[in-house]
Image (tube, rainbow, N blue to C red):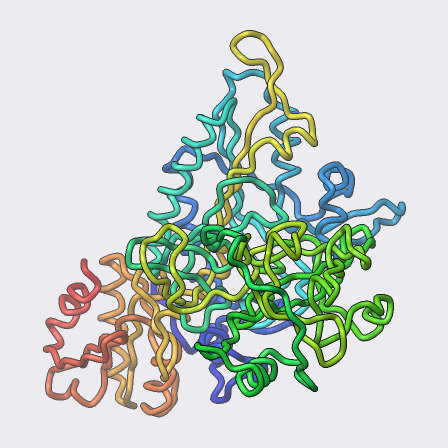
Length: 590
């Protein structure tokens, strides 16, 4: 295929868009691949659409190769199936809701578990029909509170979602492995550096859950990995609790004056100045207590207190993942007014008399959960629930007993991996795929049952598997662009070759067309810059547009040579006109 740039629907921009936060967003807009319509909503222009379709082709080929069958469901959906699974409520404000002219509630599909389930229920009734895997590539809609980063966090996006249906858990394991292997092939073909990490299932529900993350310094997701092979999304890290300690030698609980010491650092300073001991007091000896209001999708709320070592903070994303679809927000001054027993800056699970202040059985009735590091026999410095006072020697299991354990503290570089495989390293990534073993949640809610070998009705077990197709375009752009523009790999580039006709002599344009024709005959897509523009403009645009191979037909033609450039490496070479096609084919691996 040959396209002339003079008639291609594209305009490059010299300035960055005002809302661009990451390189992929900046270059995809500047190169004329996408255009913003509204926050988190983009139009695909010809160049961008070609890349998107190539990503779709890779995904489709690998899904079909693993035995999945393609379907296409509507984006506009009725409320009732989502009501049956409670996701009409659980999705909260992220769901686009609307009413039709008859007043019936509708939504724009964020995911399609319900519709896949009901379709299989409508058509299949026997174990002989299973296993089954179905997939679609379709636009999804989520009303993101803060759409950002171009295609990486939008309100409308293209996604491949697939679902497996099996008669038993053994079958689900096999379907899960097949999808996992297909995903490995997909991301290898996309050329992405990626990691597979343990993940949270979130509002989707289910048990086993893994994410495929493209490694990217601008990625929104933080993940960890260890030298021994442990890898997890930071939300899914579960700290191994230390061994419990005996209570026999626990210190006596004592009151200490800590005037104006409302922060961990201030308490440490007061203790080291006024109550010195053999070893300096440190922040990790403090028990920090934070209070949140948990807001549920049905509109109900409940308070929750979290105790954690003073050198740690609550990680907002880990907290969000635990409570999804509910949300937990810090107590406001108005919230604290309802609980006068709580002294901000001096809170603890007990007061100086030993009376419980936090916990379901306490004076406040506020449920109290602690970090896994807070185990029986550990002793802490914490607030005395009296202004300017703290308690030392407050011992877990003797002086207070929490209502549960909640692992939401920040994970740090060098923390020990939960499986003992060494210190964890932190890195950033872009979520490209997520696979779940859903189990029977949706099948039970919607009545998907089949007859087993014994003629008994059994509930089908399901898996759910997503790939961010439009997000992949941005992820590849993010991974391959440089300070001059986009730089596509050969398999995804809109055109593998861009030929620049730089000159006014008609022979330059004729030679550019001849080379383009031969390359097209050899199976390459070619973009010819035939515009009446200066060489400088053409060179700059070729770098922004990012085709992997650039051929310059210009002044050297008089000497019988053209220049061939590798956009990725920047390497340039002059070759004889007669050898131009073979040089390009060699670069293209043909």
